[in-house]
Length: 136
Image 1 (cartoon, rainbow, N blue to C red):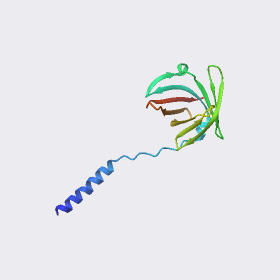
Image 2: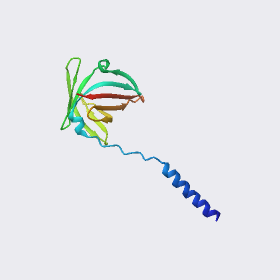
Image 3: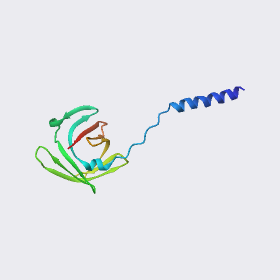
Image 4: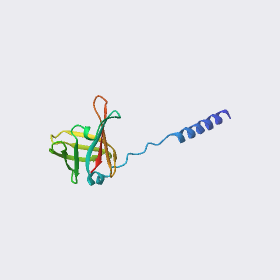
């Protein structure tokens, strides 16, 4: 009798605690068509969640245009100089960039919709950077 009470109590506890466990939602696949639908203007930068610059205060502000087939070009607003590179989306929300120098960079896509593209990455020192782009 004592043994069956123990077993029933353990099962009840498992059911209660199991019901409280929150499921981590799977990352959504990024709709790459949203990346292609707009040119994206860098309008805000953040470091560890703190706003560092917005609009014209953003250093080296640029427009980023993704092209189907995996190429991109960006144009700096200060002097209209341009750079080209390659892009692809991986894992399902990582933007993998190979810049004009051949250096690879990975960005976590935090948000992409018809108005906003939000990318983040972590530096080796543990600092979290975030760039916010608006659709043109």
